Amino acid sequence: MIRRSIDVRRRLDTLRARLEREGEGTAPSTSVDDAAERLARAFDAHEARQDAAGAVAERLVAALDVIPQGIVLADAAGRVVFRNRVADAFAGARHSEALVEPVITELIGRAVAGEAETRVLDLYGPPRRSIQLRAVPLDDPDVPRPANGDAAPPAGAFLVVEDVSERQRLEAVRRDFVANISHELKTPVGALGLLAETLAGEDDPEVVHRLAARMQREAFRVSDTIDDLLQLSQIEAGSLPPRDPVPVHLVVTDAVDRTRSAAELRSVRLVVVEPPEDLSVLGDRRQLVSAVANLCDNAVKYSDPGADVTVSARTDGKTVEIDVSDNGIGIPSTDLGRVFERFYRVDRARSRDTGGTGLGLAIVRHVVHNHEGEVSVSSREGEGSTFTLSLPAA
Image (cartoon, rainbow, N blue to C red):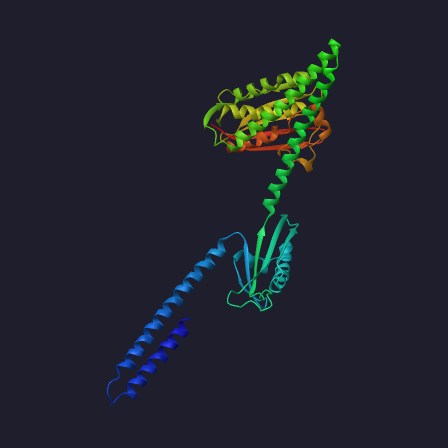
């Protein structure tokens, strides 16, 4: 653009000098000078507009380079005339991402032929990703529509490349959550209806008492599910908990007391290795007790009668680790990464016998994250599991 401007300016000066030479010896022609001056001003204005348009184009390219989607623009012949930074990465990609570029070429060819198309490409990684590509024809407003009413031929194609892996994962989580909570509520509610129908036609006091007790248990099951959902929702939506020193021995004591009745019903012994009284963590006592109690309750449910569940704590000065260990059925290695998901069950058949909402470990994970800590699990099938909370020491 600069070279063209200099060339045009040189030609304009040459023309003006020529007009001045041809006018020597004659009466001065102000019309020639005025015309040359107007032409110079028009050229300067045009050059200024070109510079402004160039600056806008540069800002637009910079903006397209920072968006997370890939953008590809092609002309009417299907030749790519622009790629932003994300789309350009696929051109020289290796491994599974090398599959994206041929699809870009194919969809652009379809778009310049007038056919819009959207396609999702699954890349098996690692990591596993889902890439959505959408190509549409571009119309030229300056090209008149044919007399027969058909659409004008496309002036090019526009393609967007987007990583939809996280969107698909969240959609799967939403579907699983709705399905699981529906199941968790439908089962006890259906049992309540059946028990009430049976109770209405029963006259034997002993049977009536047994049915009423069963109805009470099912009603508590619904209440527990709703309480856990509300607690999980409050923990997820709440801000960071207060950063107060909380004695670890009080957290452990409260959590064990909350779980003791369930342990006695299953003949499981809760063993507490008393932590030092001066050992503290930073956070909210109520949430921390809830997290440790959920771990204890989970260990009790998956332990055999007569087994022990051990709760202990230790510190390295910066971090406090609270361990809850059992000698139960253990967790398969393929399930270790999913045990903290809502409603996830390692053994669904056993879970129906032990009860529970399937939300306890999800609550533990959110409590620990709110306290800027971590939760981990180590397990061997048939030998037991150990859950560890790592929290900042006070």
